[in-house]
Image: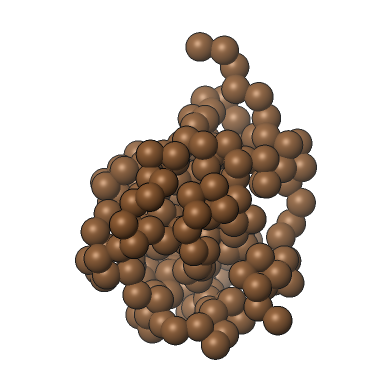
Length: 231
């Protein structure tokens, strides 16, 4: 199989992901959900190609003290309920570093305590995002619908997993996890929670999702609001 070329940007990735999701064109009660912030511009292109409404489900990664970019877990806010997932491997490594004295953190004395403290802070951002991105919209309800959940890439897959768990409690007719690229265990964790997983490029050898893109600029709150047509 020929090497997959890098995506130009999230719009290009969304178009290519939309093509891969073409079998869902015309699916009953179809809705496309973007995971903010980076998943929303990808989801916007998918929604156009599938002629489906674009919605958003608020998610927030939970980092650990001193390593905020390392996903120890994630939160999702679905219809007023918070779903929390943990990345057990990251927490186990963190606990091991605490016991060995290699961690430089001055935070709580266990990985579980550190996670709980970080999750409490992350929940404030999660609620802020939900209010900002879903203002004047009805509470998200996917019961009986075909739901395509889109992110710009999966690494640990924590945010996708939180979203899938939260949405799954609403009894959708079909739950689809989709991303342009996977470079970690995220695809495997999504398989256990979704009825279908669509990832055109499972990139062995990339150390981050950003390496799959030529342009991986930060997406702002204003960008998300614009794509959702929020005035």
